[in-house]
Image 1 (cartoon, rainbow, N blue to C red):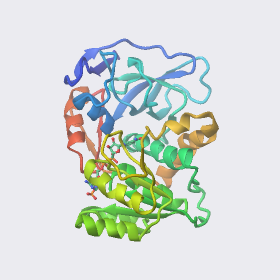
Image 2: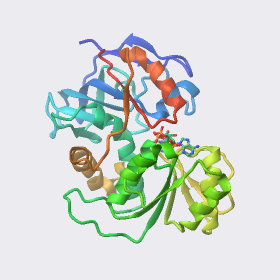
Image 3: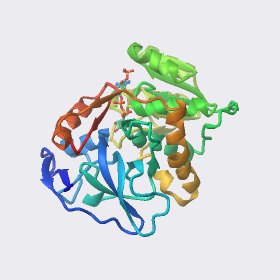
Length: 341
Ligand SMILES: NC(=O)c1ccc[n+]([C@@H]2O[C@H](COP(=O)([O-])OP(=O)(O)OC[C@H]3O[C@@H](n4cnc5c(N)ncnc54)[C@H](OP(=O)(O)O)[C@@H]3O)[C@@H](O)[C@H]2O)c1
C-alpha cells in the first residue's frame, strides 16, 4: 500500500493529506503499518495554536500509534514482521518518517511494546503516552517505587502525594500507579467523575468545584505532601496548587506545561516531557519494564484501567476535527483514528 500522511504545511494551517515516501528503516529501526493513531493534547496545541513552533515544515506530527511490524532493520533482535505493537515516540525526535499521522511510520526499537492478540490495539495506543509519563515522572525522575505486577501484597509507604485532578487521564493513571505501589494519594475530582476516581483507590478525594478558599484549606489540611503535581496546570489551578506548596514552606510544583503564571515566593515550577527520564541510561531497566511488563501485563490483568475512547471518522482526513475536539478538552476522552480508513 502506498504511504499517505496528514501534513502540517505551515504554522496553524489545517493538516492536508498528501502521498509521502515509502521509508526503509535504519539498522535499529522498524517500519510499522499504522492502523491506530491516538491523539495527544500536545499535538493539538502545536497544530492549532503553534505553542511549540515545530520546524522544519512540512511536518508530520503525532507520537502515539499502534499497528503491525512491516519491516525490521538489520540489528533489531526482539521483533518480527507481523508482530502487533504499540509505540510512543520520544518527544523531541524530529524527522517526518517518525510522525504518527501517516500510514507507514518508522520507529526506533526502544519505546515499543508487543500487544497480545486478544487486546484491541486502540487500548494500549490510547494509554501509552500518558503511562510512560506516569512511570517517567514518579519512578524515573522522583525515585518512587513501582507497583508489583505479580499480585504480591504491597508494602505501605510513608510518602504522601497530592495529585491535583485525578479525574484527568494523566492524573487518573498516576493515582492508580501510586496507590498500587503503596503510597498515600490525595486527589481532586468534580462530582461527575467521583466514582471513577474512587475506583482508582485514592486515599482522599476532594471536590475541586467547591469554593476556592474551602478547597485550598481542605488540600492544605490533608498535607503536608512529599510531592505535589498539578495535572491541569492552567492559571486557575496553579493559583490553588501554588498556595498548597507555599503553605508547606515552598518547594517544587510539578506542572503539565511550561508557562509564565506567577507563583508564590518559594514555589518552583517544574516541567518536562515526563517520559524523558526513561531514555536515560540509569533508567534502562525501568524503561524495559514499562514496555515489556507494565503496559501489556497491566492492561491484561486490569491493573491499568482503559480510558473512555472516541473514534475519529474519516481516517487521516478526520484528524483536523479530532485535534479540535482535543482542545475543547474537559472530557477525559482519548481520540483514536485509523489512518488506513
Ligand atoms: N508534560 C508531560 O509529560 C505531559 C504528558 C501528558 C499530558 N500532559 C498535559 O497534561 C494535561 C492534561 O492532559 P490529560 O490528557 O490528562 O487531560 P484530560 O484527560 O483531557 O483531562 C480532563 C479532565 O481534567 C479535569 N479538569 C479540567 N479542567 C479542570 C480545572 N480547571 N480544575 C480541575 N480539574 C479540571 C476534568 O475533570 P473533572 O470532570 O473532575 O472536572 C476533566 O475531566 C494536558 O495539558 C496535556 O498536554 C503533559
